[in-house]
Amino acid sequence: MTPDLPYISPLMDVASLAPGSSAVIVAETIIFFTVISVGGWVYETLLCLVMERRLVRRGVLYGPCCPIYGVGATCVWLCLGWIESPVGVFVAGAILATSIEYATGTFLVHRFHRSWWDYSMFRFNYRGRICLAASLVFGFFSLLIVLFLQPLIFGGLEMLTEATLIDAASFLVICYATDIVATTLSLDARARERVLDVARRIRNIT
Image 1 (cartoon, rainbow, N blue to C red):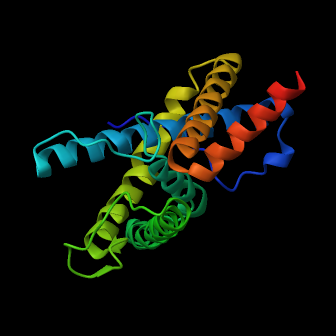
Image 2 (image 1 turned 180 degrees about the vertical axis):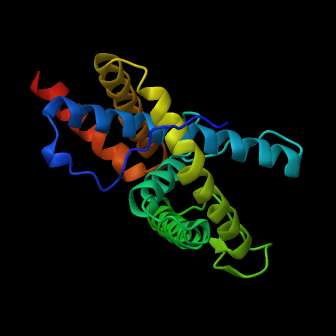
């Protein structure tokens, strides 16, 4: 028999919880986000290895993670976790994740003038940023998140102490913040120049 894994309802009244409990939920969500982001990076790396027969650096950030998977999984859990019908989760998850992917792709192109994925070779694609095949995969992933991964990951995290969860989540936030700053500076010449200008001013003052 499959053991009953705890399910953290996305609709729970966080305001009614004690401050410590609220901090734990935030910490668990950050860790959940990270686990899925790293899993997405592994999935895409292996997929590209099979399709292109070579290692390809995936993701926008330097670290081994694809945050778009974490964002999508967290949104699916929060928005769709209450849906009981697997078909409903599949359809709604495909639509939600596809919307997130299109919005993210559009932002990256406008912000950094480059694209990190291109579906132009697939049928039923739109501007190469989304396609039907990817949407169907996202629907399957949504089912996997709601029915299996979210209960499994949160159930495992309940074995850790509150202090451990908060410390781990804080460390991950620092890592993400550092990576985001480093990535932005490497991709955006204007941001890099602004930082250098601030550094020069500080040096002149001191």
